[in-house]
Image (tube, rainbow, N blue to C red; front, side, top):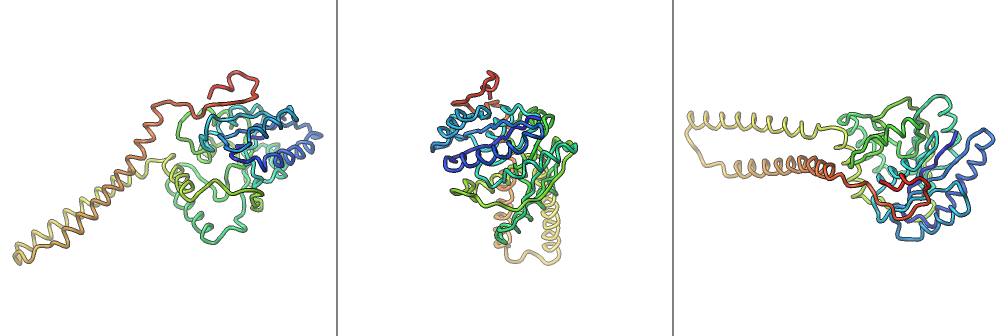
Length: 316
């Protein structure tokens, strides 16, 4: 079995070399079992010498294939490019910062040989702060009640995919991609195992609080239209409340006459309704914006440099 290692890289010049050494050691362990490896690195528009390091790795190891973007297109685009360039019977997706231990790859291969098309590595939250752990659990609990697929807490991009899963994912051509949801949506026999959370060996994560919030929002909106349905129900509820309130005001005026005008009530109602309207417009705008990007049909990424041999690999 040929195993493709797909590793997106962004400003990883200090660690990608050590990462390659460790996955190459794993490749040597699997070789006597009849498994070979190829390494597909995707440089997501890095501003450091990541591309130069990848070129050197390709010169030293003929199994290395690299793709470098013309600019930073984001991790989802890098994952897509890596999957498109991978030729293996199985593909292992992992980060190049060594937070995904390469030593777990043999375990993944073993589970693949047992008939599982997706092998998911679920990290424990050992070492995470209480606030982050509780926030993550709350997010997954809410999302799994809303979206049409199941997202597992602690399961990220570190996973093994069979060739038919990779082909199925590549057949999903939408521009707004949420890979964790896409992997869950295509299905196929899946298994999960846990591993201890590893510390990033060098540098800082490029994920800021805002990017994490945006990523979470993408997961919420990419696989359901329930926020739009909720807007409809909320509108009907507000209409019902307005009708009841109107009936109460008219009845009170007929029975007791008109007292002091309800200035505070009016201001509160108008302000609250205006806020609800802005929220609903924002929800509608999110979906409309996704449609806008879809209909433009722009490529997911542009390739600046690659050592890919197949001409079709250059077409995003």
